[in-house]
Image (cartoon, one colour):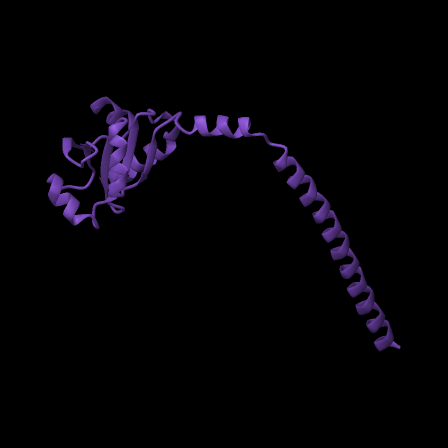
Length: 157
């Protein structure tokens, strides 16, 4: 008798979960259809507005040589930063906390001090927490060390 009751309970639980999952699938399909319709209703004018907003502030991003071309439109500063350097960490955090305050004509490129040995030699970088402003050809305009805020970078330019 106990085995029969146990078997009935197991069957009831299985039936419960199967019907529940089927109902969830039906609800999910309905939601997916609504979302698809909502997305297709967005017109191209809305997309253009979002594209125009992309230039509202400058950026802080990983270094790569092709990003030097941004200097044709504004200022490019390479931040030679080491993960183990306390003052580098402070500036890095301040920049990240202030992303919306980076002027639209400024691109800050994050360069790993320990990995970018050729680039350090090119710009004469001998200490971490060095910043180098460059033109679109990668030619150094100015170099400085220190500063713990985004504002300190902006003031140098």
